[in-house]
Length: 445
Image (cartoon, rainbow, N blue to C red):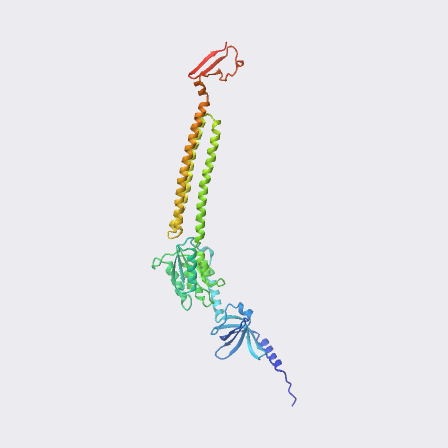
């Protein structure tokens, strides 16, 4: 008998590894996770088992950090990887590259099929999306009454818009049949009067993050159709930013998280306060600008008064003053009416809002400014009238009527030319001499 050829253990194990890697290659394996060990290096070591066998598995740090589903003891998973042999121990192991929850592939197929069906019916169309109300008074929350998502939304609403009243319709957001409760809550609120629910301006439907299976209730057709038929604008806030559900495509708006949904549906109260302050400052600038403009006009009329005849000095400024006063009153009244109407509308819209006190203060300030402006205008008009009276008296004192009173006369030719020198006259010319109490005609000899 010829001597048998022997090989080393290392070579034998290496041949086993090569055979497994070449013959099996990359495979999908399903089973239950057990004996999970997470190393400080980030590598995962665990066992995958079923009723008949078990296999050692390793998932290196790079693949583990990118995995959307993190394996844990007791989980039923589908693993994608390569079967190999760990030479140092001679043990067979699966080098895992990808992890899915068992059944996830089927769920994804159902997701795509429903998405395609509803899209073909037009439920995702942009033209059917309704805008959210700009200043809601009540916000309906359809979510778990004990979840962190509810507290996140309440915190955001309380911080940004304390005058807005959140109303909770608590539902189960995970597990068998939860989609029925979610859809029923949407339908109930869609007909809030018939169902005895409070009227709300917008609905937020959602929950916190989770796996595809955890979020699956929001991928059910009954929820999608309830959202599409709802009479109230709906915001979908399911999971985290990377999560997408059928509800996100049907809703009037999709928010990446429940907190983001709360920020989308209400304005920032501090920003509204800053806008009110800017409006008040702008109104004051308009009134002050009008006053300065009319002061410049009145000053110009005053400077040009002495170059005019007595009649025009008395007539034009008075007419302009009267018209100016009327225009200023009309402008102020119009500005005040517009601002008061706007402020009244804001006050009515936010009757339960803290900025109500600010609006009342602004209205009082506007009234005080109007009183002050009326007082200033009255004082200026009286001062301008006194100045015009003084100018009228001065013009009369310097005019020709004053000279007639002192015994002077003025001689004019028959054509009305003023006679300044005897050289202007010839023998036989007719003169007209104006006196205080009449005229005398004479002939030059």
